[in-house]
Length: 403
Image (cartoon, rainbow, N blue to C red; front, side, top):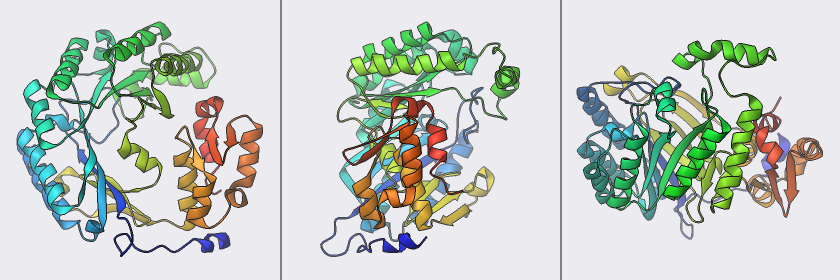
């Protein structure tokens, strides 16, 4: 659109007088012991021989795609999956060493790995710390063994507790715990008990996600009738209803807030100073590059995604599956619907500085509509979701997409 032409031109990062722009790196490790019943992520069981082939391919991709990246400074690295903690520590260290060799890392870079209980011991966690990991994200999901079996998890609550204790013993001072809400058969009381147990452990960060029954998963086949009955307005058979699910989120807000956790993003809570930098930078649309099958990147206002074929990847085919140069309008849209995930929302001043146009000139109708509906607030130059707006976040965010 015309107003987009007012966007200010900036010098390239790294030019004289310029601070290097931040860059995040995502490493996708697609392997798992077995697929969980609810999981629709790009993950699969595989042999150790395939793990090694994949690591070799990762190293090649990292070396082949570093052109121009040294004028950025890497402030976060995130190993996700799948289950990254399945890899042998020497394989993980080779990947991290390649990143250090090919990119400029900040001395204060946040380096995270996701990990699942049942794939960790004290020795592996201590090795992670020695090689430079300073943040650990543990997939607990629940502390109820029956629910863990229903989910198809490989660990028990006791396994998680041991893993958490080892992580502290190994020296991790920044730990996230993943918890799931609205699980089959889960009650508000049961979810509150899980929250209280998590708080008692005093992790620095908690991620709280609702179960989403995705097509193509065993859960979809198992609970399809529940979904259909809910869509027809009838009582669900087994899954918690919408009222119970909202109650769980209200309980999380109250319990975690009272324990000193700030609710900084729709699904994430952190103690002061422990916001997940990598994810927060993604919501702020800072640049990141992804390596591995299915990994996504945002670089120089281009979004590209690696293909998802493991066999092609280990043979050295790193061709992107998709590549899209974002228009100014698309950049604005992303700024709004990603930024609104954050509790502090979107800065009107930053929007104007980036795009050279007032936010109301582009989105005045939406701002007025959602503010009148009690879903948005505009205060001190920040546009953010209300508590009710967070409940209806998808509805609000869709309004900022071009029709």
